[in-house]
Amino acid sequence: MIATPYLIGALDIGSTKTCAVIGELILEGDGPAQVKVLGVGQVKPSGIRRDAVSNIEETTEEIRQALKQAELMAGMQPRGLYVGISAEYVQTSTSNGVVAIGGDEISEDDVERVHEVARAVVVPPDKELLHVIPQDYSVDHRGGIQQPAGMIGTRLEADVFMVLGSGAAARNLRKAVARAGYEVAQLVLTPLAAGLSVLTTEEREVGAAVVAIGGRTTEIAIFHEGKIRHVALVPCGGVSFTNDLVKGLGIPYAEAERVKERHGVATIQLVDPEQSIEVPGPAPGARKHMPRELLAHIIEQRMDEVLTLVLHEIDRAGYAHRLGGGVVLTGGGASLEGTLDVAQSIFTMPVRCGAPGAGLTGLADSVRRPKFATAAGLMLFGVGRIREDLSNGRGTTLRALSKVGGWLKEFF
Ligand SMILES: Nc1ncnc2c1ncn2[C@@H]1O[C@H](COP(=O)(O)OP(=O)(O)OP(=O)(O)O)[C@@H](O)[C@H]1O
Ligand SMILES: [Mg+2]
Image (cartoon, rainbow, N blue to C red; front, side, top):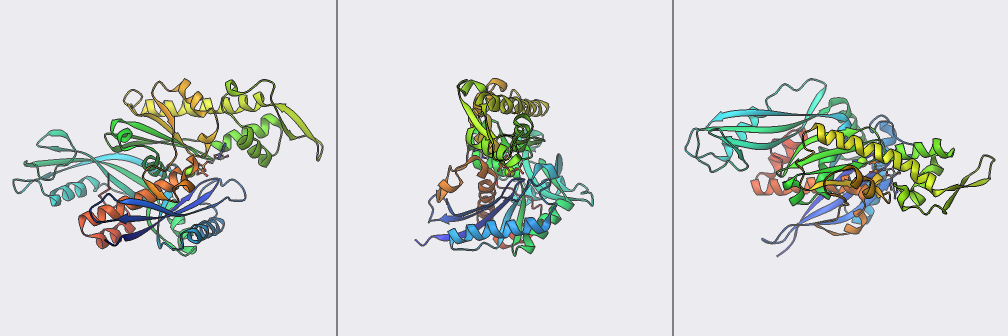
């Protein structure tokens, strides 16, 4: 049997790096589908981006470079890209719809009809509908149904989770991607993507929160019964740790970043009190020694604050006692040694650190780092999309619609 290749391009424009991943969905006969990572590219902007879409020129150049690197590795060029849009630029809400069932049995068309009714809310002119994710269905007032098609009933109701993006952010992302010579297959909410790449199917089922500690922000997505249920954002991340070190140690930003990545640890408990680190001194070219405990103390304070804010968000959403799968930390900021120790002292639920890799073959090792959680997840989103199109047998129509944004059927 000849393998059928489907190429997927993913693009994550973060506040501290732009990352592209190229992957391929491989379907062999009736066997399980495989996702093969073919190439990865990463470009760091010159400074910290205050806003992921504010400087189109610079962003365009980073997109070009990141994709060039990934394409060189892959030996292939994707056309449409699954591009991340940060939780910073979206609003989520739930909506519901009801339809009457003509025949005895609920058909796929009835399910589509109820989605259409549920999504028929007014989208303000400055917003764009990015995702409409069916949550649960009720048939003749019996709720909690996941797959209504084929059931007998006269009344079908659907709850949907809607993600509305800022129109300006969406336009700027598309503009930068187009200028770089690509097109956006779909804009995808970044914490949703992170949830796809680091949470297991079981965690998403029993309930889990993916917490991506990025550069400027920490994004949270809560999954329960297999579906995304809530999205939140904490306005601090890895950049906050670095800024604290700039102030606390009196050193330049680039040096603080270097010290953080090389010697940083998120709790003083893991530091030998005798240990010291070398940082630039007050005079040009001079060096001074500092206790590593001080570095750890500064980071610990902030890590504690960030994770406490995350816990408040989970609590506010009503999920503090409903996440059997607990919290999975990812994003570049979660690379700090000791992150898990701090998290364990804050969350009264299971905690682990997660990185992409599960279910990936090929050059999967190149994305097996927490900072690639979003980019890998965007690729997996694309894969899910193609598989859904194939199983619906109407790939082209669906893909065409998805470009407009907001096709109803999500793959989970
Ligand atoms: N090994 C490491 N040790 C400590 N911190 C790290 C390490 N690797 C990355 N980071 C930090 O992680 C942060 C970047 O994380 P990530 O790449 O997930 O963010 P981003 O996608 O650029 O930003 P955002 O998602 O907030 O827009 C930076 O602040 C960086 O210093
Ligand atoms: Mg990110």
